[in-house]
Length: 310
Image (cartoon, rainbow, N blue to C red):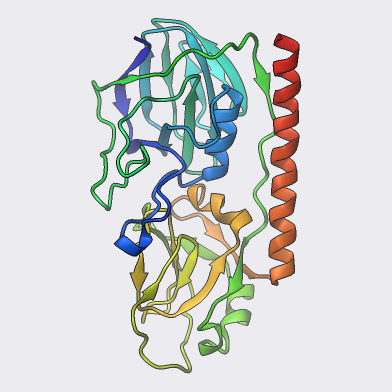
């Protein structure tokens, strides 16, 4: 059986896939990868389906040994990885052999790194997904000494690299239902850079800065929530909900991070600064189309490479 053995798991490492859908009415969130774009790219480089299970590592520190031959790909934060004594560059498909060790150091920039292996990481599904929902009690974080089985080897023959996406200047969002409760929200957002609080986690990014002042509105009844919603609690410090966000809540909704920027929630680390930038629905749609064109070019490159093998 193809497998790998975990030696160190760093601050937090877990198996993540595309997450669970269609269960929010039962109080079960999506979970899955914080940086869904990085997960897709790593998986496609090693011949897996885009949402296949892979290893998500927060702030490095992962060390493992391979008990088989195969291919790996690292995306997301550049964690200065080494396969034995050889550097492993993010965005590249790399060959590994049985007995080799992979070490992920602390990222230079960003927070989440993704390790995909050809054949995917084999984990039992819970409610239709392998994703570890740590706040919801579905699955668990990885621990040293654990062995992870891998799927069948893919017919890959040579290294291959892609150009990874460049983060936009800010975190773009669409104004939410309670946007007008904060009449000075836009000038406050534009003129300051928010700092990511160390108290952030997979449930949400807590931002600190000049507090937003609520000037209108009444107490809200509990309402549905999604990853990317920007809530404003009474202290005026925004919270951007992450992939393990609760399914309902009652804080005012300042906005919703656009779909094309959701992946950035997995790369904004503690004490990093970010600007919140309101955009129009048309701008949000254009950003999403640009991202889809980027992914289409990646798929075309991989398809040509597969034709060459045949």
